[in-house]
Image 1 (cartoon, rainbow, N blue to C red):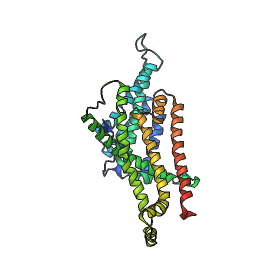
Image 2 (cartoon, helix red, strand yellow; image 1 turned 90 degrees about the vertical axis):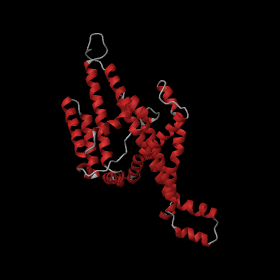
Image 3 (cartoon, helix red, strand yellow; image 1 turned 60 degrees about the vertical axis):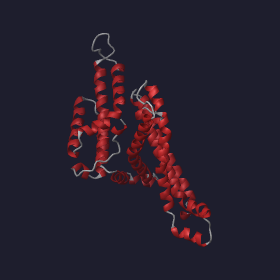
Length: 328
């Protein structure tokens, strides 16, 4: 099932959609989402479906690829449909039943909305490379730099999250296969038992993520001017003294930026875990907000996530400027 998650993957091509500027595609996706959430009648939903089908045809993305990516979201789609069918009041389809015609209509609309929303996001990531997506988003948000919004760090965080999603999914699949070979069972039992069975996966998964953080640290240390290191060596400094008094202090601003980036990326992972039944703010927004139509909870949870990301980035920026002696 994990191999069916295709979010973040890029399929190279030479279609008109692939060649379209990333900024244009981002703007079109935003307009697409707005139009989707403003749709109420069947005519508007049919128009959005036709527009989505046209984009799929122009990008030459096969429907099977989209359906494969939708498989991990099947539980959420079915749960949303069931909640709308059984908890929407109206005219019963059979006297005495709790299922109403209004509930069925609302359920179909919610299913269409979720499927179309995910499909539109897939088409963006399938036809746009992470680098082009990052550059386009940064250019669109460039005016926000005037009010001290860390645009570059935000776009870099999104780019790394998109790049790491397929990698972490592959690592998770390897860990699950190894534990199944040792007798672990992830598919039997009720939902709670299956969720508890997934807990042993988290420790090796986080350990497997250490090399990516190490790459950030390695890049930060590589940015230190070699002339400074040579000067320390010429004065008779030992290796430990060079590391403690030269490498770490010189690389500290970049290390702090990397730590903030890792924290925001982990926060993004925990938020996305809610879509797969995990805990965290993502679960609150999806389970208690979207599925129960408590949009206030969904909006507050989303805003809280944004506030946490901004707090981490602003705090990282303040610490970076405080320890960066080159700008003093």
